[in-house]
Length: 164
Image 1 (cartoon, helix red, strand yellow):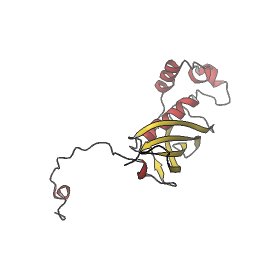
Image 2: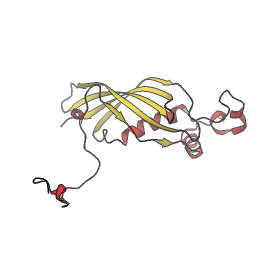
Image 3: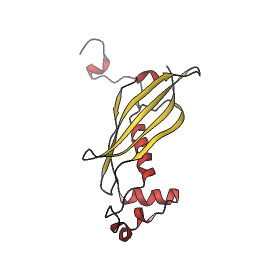
Image 4: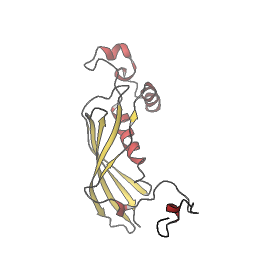
């Protein structure tokens, strides 16, 4: 047993455990956040196309895609962007979002193929107080990378976050 910490003694606490409850004060400018990875499958492309109506042959038609500069089907750019946002959400830092304020500077840099695993490295570009009481603003610069370190997409996104 280490001091009075019940967890170090192997004793359960009555406090529920779950996703971290992060607030605006928990990140400062310059902080770097890494996400888990996700392997892109055929199902991602087909479901995204069905959900959005983005039925472009480059994403769905193997014969057509084989004749393009990529030589195979590629993931939709907006799918990659959405997965990047979603992977960051899974880090727990966005549990107290009040509002999503938008995207800036979206760039599709390289293709994402079926079988590629993407993850996000994001840096807090801005962490500023808001004029509204009880909230602050984060602007996060996202870099989406493949398993080999190739950057596939970059963008910035801003959020209004509850303060403690």
